[in-house]
Image (cartoon, rainbow, N blue to C red; front, side, top):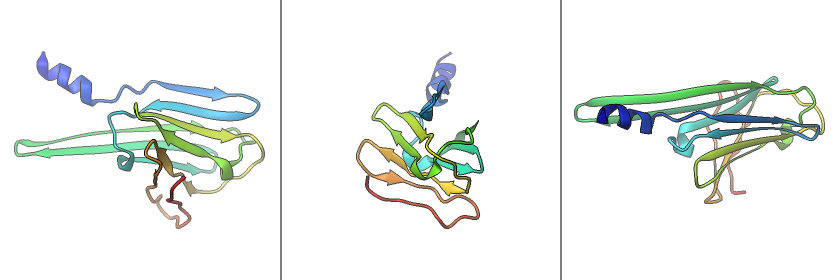
Length: 133
């Protein structure tokens, strides 16, 4: 039973909440089981993809965990102003304002409470951003 409890503690509980109003599209995810550098947020066309990959190696073997969540964005979102943040409790929020339209492939920086952003490079793209915000 202890092993099952340990497993439940390392597998993220992926409760997500989607908000789709006249002003914005927003997604909230619990990613507390992952470090910011283990997460990727990308947009391709109108598909928002959030991925997490974690691996732990020990002398007795290794364990992996991962997740992928995809959301179809409304056509009237402004991808130039997408914002992704993770708070100290591991709650990720992705906000996309609805002020225009834009469809391209783009890596989205993840802002953490410490004030820096972590960006993973998407496949076949050189237009990614990392910086302090």
